[in-house]
Image 1: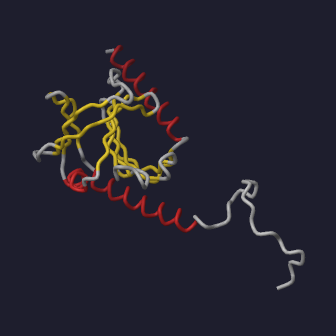
Image 2: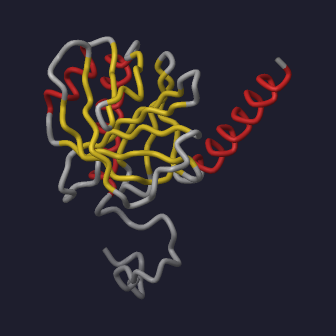
Image 3: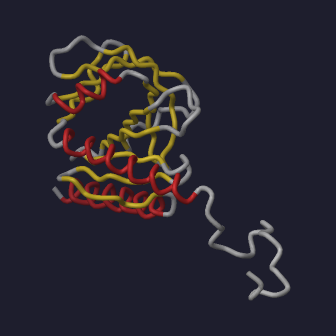
Length: 198
């Protein structure tokens, strides 16, 4: 019992440290039930949703920056998946409820120190299923490795879309404006000698 409590506390501290480290690169947009919507600064201000499950599995869905080979990504990670190698390919099958499985080549990566698998997708049908269905099962080498509840995913993914629309509108509106930092080295128009000469 004590060992289980110690492991649970240790895992919570690790997850908390990862969240604090991630806050430097992400900004919380809104919490939606058990999901959180963030803006990812390194990905050119693209929005994503994430949730944490009881077994410390993290599930994340987000937009990729314009010009990427995929429009969106799905990422799953778990502290126990220490054998995942960064940059290595993993052939997964993702099955939503009783729908046909999606063959999903995944790439080993890290979110801070969290081992994870990232999958790029251009399939709007997959995201639609994530919004409408109840469970996501993940298979590797013919064996089910995850069975995740999608409770609240519809509202969370809708909010992710609203986040991206708002961020895109803000970035677009401010793209041609004067820099906020006057010392960036960008020269503006030369000031007039007589500011009152209209």
